[in-house]
Length: 213
Image (cartoon, rainbow, N blue to C red; front, side):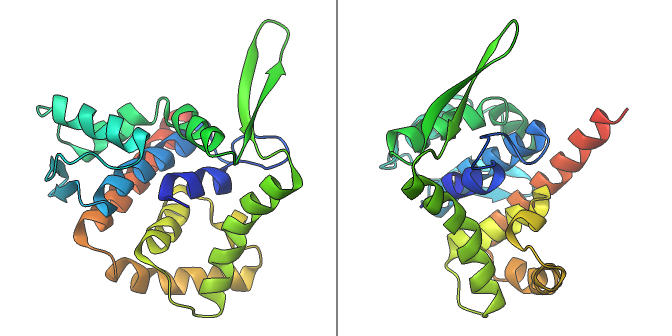
């Protein structure tokens, strides 16, 4: 499963469909996941906090293709923090729709007194198992010291950077193991992805601090 999809399933409760974090933090994590996908696909690079398109070849995924076109059309905007803030506004809906097209979730409308909200939830037992597996496999890989591919190492780093750690690593020992492993995980990432994780962590911290004022 691609990076932002995996992050979405971890970041949302599979019973209620609601974000486990403050929605702004979740949006930033998903935005980072989408930018990370373009880096993993070899279309995007990061240097000193700025993003550069290095290949215009369309990715196979339609959402990534749309994002790449947007980056190409806006060359005056390069800062990672700018793109994280912009993409975070509707990243949950964009990734939710992609999961819907893949058959991983179903749209569920939650009605309030004066409004309605569409959430994307794993409804069937198979969908719920697939959603739960995203957390389980990361915890097992880290706990048993299994090798992880690059996408999963970035996923773990984003989980920690955005505050989702306890929803993946449930026990105190698992959480300690995760934090002890983080320096090694970060050192194994290309510098582009390290920058992405660092800017995401900073953006989440700023967003939550602003919300408490």
